[in-house]
Amino acid sequence: MASPRAVRLTEVKTPKKTPAASKEAAPKADVKTEEKKTSRLDAQSRAYATGKRKNAVARVWLSQGRGQIVVNDRPVEQYFARPVLQMIVRQPFLVADRDGQFNVMVTVMGGGLSGQAGAVKHGISKALTYYEPDLRPVLKKAGFLTRDARVVERKKYGRYKARRRFQFSKR
Image (cartoon, rainbow, N blue to C red):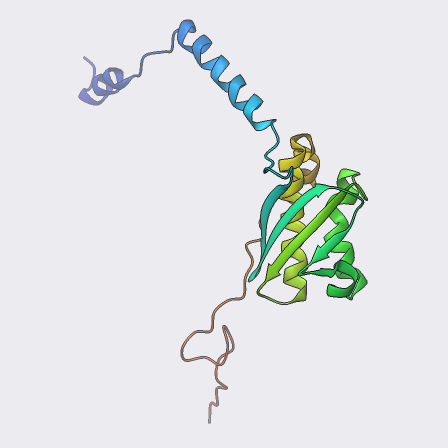
């Protein structure tokens, strides 16, 4: 005689899907992939995206052009004076092999210069995928589409900083 538990397990089994049901689901998946391949452009044929890094937020407009990058109404060389920050901003174009093909207009606020450069890079990468969806695998593999969630840890009460404790004296 079977135990009561074994009987309950046999009653709970879910019915298997029929081949007809799986055939109906397949075309829906194809439709979704076709929708993802279309570019998302506004009336002026620009791609818009938002990039974030630490406390910095960058709003990016990407359009066909000669490779000019303007950040807060100033050229990128003037806004990001350090060559390292300029390199960070241009990385998505170099990885996607689209250097000098797009004009970029950026409004960035919050955080410091390093966080702002990371936010601009994130925004440019997202805008490139909206303009040319075929670039998504290349930029995803390089890690440019992933939002870096690391932020400064908050200060806790009873401590000097986030983790620094007050000096302990045994005697």
